[in-house]
Length: 301
Ligand SMILES: Cc1cc2nc3c(=O)[nH]c(=O)nc-3n(C[C@H](O)[C@H](O)[C@H](O)COP(=O)(O)O)c2cc1C
Image (cartoon, rainbow, N blue to C red):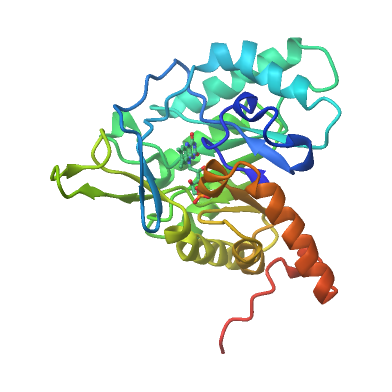
């Protein structure tokens, strides 16, 4: 069980609240080459199906992350099995490799039990500013260039995080894997609009945003099923709407090898730990294991 990107900061905010060492891992908030101020407030709003956010990928930038935030997190988890995945964003193709190369450079110069992250997660669902804002993952040659560019600067595992709005998510997943990705993270938020009816304005300062939480669970499970069927054996991190063991099991049965919790853990920081316990109980009661359940979905004939 992982904490999903952008919902657990760089771990510091959770210190003392969440037993990070009991989780499978933490995916950091996005890291871009330069610091990003992000979107105007309000940046998040709730609705019946979960949450909508337009954070604008606000983050302190590569220099600050590699010199302060990441070393802190790696030191804090020095003796723990907890994996650290760094989520990477860019506004141009070359930004992704620049961020990863910068982190690799710091890792090579560091000492201690843990010098660098365990993997990278490439947020190719963000807008490519030079291509008029179309997301990186939506254009095959851009997706290929982003993944191949990063592959050239690190040997650590790479996960490409895809949007469920892609016309052919399994096809995009295949392109990412062919370009050097080791796995996929499915899914990012779903574009949406929540209206404040009294003000007749969007609930978010930016206008539209990304929907997360229970409303997107079936969307993520279907994306996972499509990709796992098309690319058997390729690791998938299932994320989107998980707030219970049942939700996590749906992703696993559809083919996810690992799952992550975002919105539900923002509401209740220890939710991920609780789901891990519930999963163990569920499996024990049925004499099975999560590993045995991966991809066990029986599609109607
Ligand atoms: C406030 C917020 C910030 C997020 N920031 C990022 C981010 O920096 N990078 C990224 O790839 N995904 C980001 N996401 C998407 C989540 O990692 C996750 O894919 C999505 O929220 C669906 O999972 P959930 O329904 O469990 O929240 C963010 C989501 C939220 C709610």
